[in-house]
Image (tube, rainbow, N blue to C red):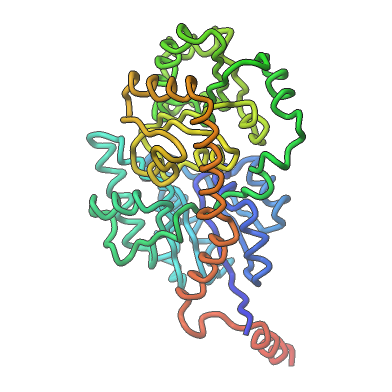
Length: 404
């Protein structure tokens, strides 16, 4: 019998609602009624229009702000009371903390905390302590914790954030899978996309392009990337750097590195981009020397686009990149090792081709969206208490009795 499940997603900021692209329509087709709550912004309104689901705005600070957090919890609790969902699915550290507390207070039948990454990994001192306890509370109050990757699950268990029996990973990881058949499929783009994108960015057709996609922040390893670039640009006159992303004040890079990015004629900056696939086609190598990652969706996207990858040997990245097969891994903050691995790809076009093709094959085998969506839907059904959700037929009978 079909179920009429009412589900509320909670994220800290509306940008994170991109986690669910394609997933919303799939869940709706299974009879799931979707609601979404996040901080206010035009992206929340865009999500509402695109997905045709009710949305609710509650301001949530990324930092720990006790008085404002209590106010946010109360507002989330009020919305939960009004929506009366069967499942609250919380995402991101702050959305997870406030959402799980509010869901627990509202006695929601099922509350899930989805770990997309662990900021505490790179934090120090008092901040690390706060972030650790935030994760512990979210994991404690949730009835099920889902990790975006197997390596992050291992960290969560090792750090005592969650007992092993309570935290799981869906299939090989990822919260939404990769749309490798449509969006991130080189075969679906016009044949001249690479040439046109390079032309629009001011990159010569015969250049070797090192790419970066993501926020231009310290934790993404941008400073190490620029230092490695300085070494390589002197060795290879046809090497160009294409950076697809934007600067963020919360975790800024140094003024010196920012000036280098903006002044070097062989570095090409795009700013914030909502549609990235054409930029992947313009690249020959993707580098992500990040300090911390949940899984590294950018790495999965790049692999789907047949790009060889140089990334850091850290939790999250090790799930997305198979070292020596789809990419090359280096220690974090190691500029010389980063330059050496990138150089290996620059000098060996055949290796780039082999790892790029192997990467796409791996995505198609292990990170297909439909498989992730179905696994999550089955998880919802499994977690729901018996008789907590009426079938459509029972709802019609109940409605009929009320009308009489």
